[in-house]
Image (cartoon, rainbow, N blue to C red; front, side):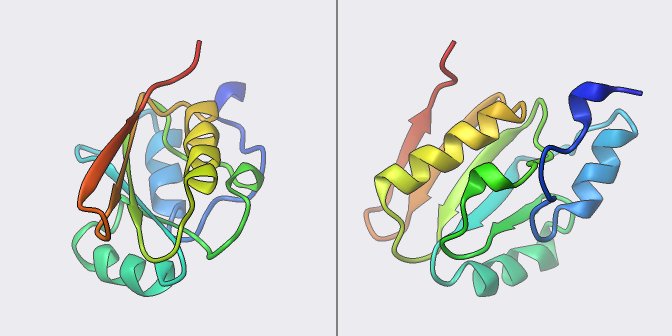
Length: 121
């Protein structure tokens, strides 16, 4: 058994398929979309239609550290869905890197800008 992939918390909404893919030793062909913010549920449901295995949602104002993110060796694109703060996004990025993400980018439609995060060594 690969103990590096053992969940440390609950799997986030819409993440069960992605977790199963990773348990089988695979990773998705596309980037992972993580939706965070006040309207995360609605935006996430829309993305889910086109990206059923690549969409994750952080329920509004939940602590990302309490989830196990099935993102090992993946590029994660955090999409802001209303009213997120930089400290909150920083905490999400740390949680994603903790669970093996190789790259994390953040996009806010309010400022039309992408922020690139790097894993701290």
